[in-house]
Length: 130
Length: 181
Image 1: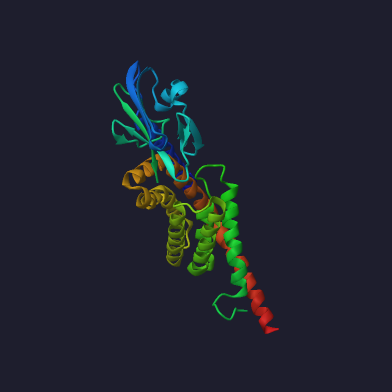
Image 2: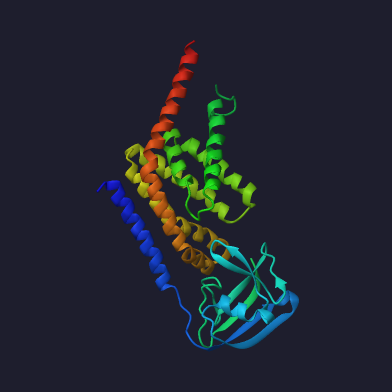
């Protein structure tokens, strides 16, 4: 086989393998009903909201949508997936602030679409400046 | 013909913005496919055919043009660093080898480490945690970026260098003839 075509094939296979691996290694949500806590802190609006929910959802985005009546999430599509820009009627000014998401007190490493929902998790959404 | 206050010829003054425009046009044309781009290939070719100095000026104009499209963003600081770095490495490699293989490898590595480089720049502004998130989140895009860069580099680098070298030499030849007349 032509050397160039072989090299391209190898690189494409490695890239596809890497993409597959990143999907396999991505954290997954726990099946079944879980009880989780959601906290929303928006200092400028004097919002300090905490509530617990029983849910079967696997990821945070689904949980937010499930509780849309109360949490009223608003998202913007980006190339990295949906970005949370609004909660409880407050829309963050994306030029100077964002919704910082913490899971059990630790900064989230991925967006809401990929944050798994596990039993006892505490999700904190706090509007923070850049 | 050279301008009085710089070492740039009129040819350079016309050529450099044209090459910059071709980068912007190339980037725009492929912008609908995330992280598949032709800027890396074009800059490597420009650095090899026209030399580091001209290619460096091309990167400055290209990066500045991005501000007009996207406003001033922190990632633009990375643009002012990474594209000149690429042109420097490409022009240095070209002095040692004219084969397409080292350039395909350079393009591959450039794509694979693109996200990491920008994560480092972003972490200066938003903290180390943010940098890690930025990099990890972008790894699938870096894989696509690296693979597509490799393919374009392997198949298009040499024909483009040959074509541009021929056009450059033809121009110089014509200029030489005019001067003799």
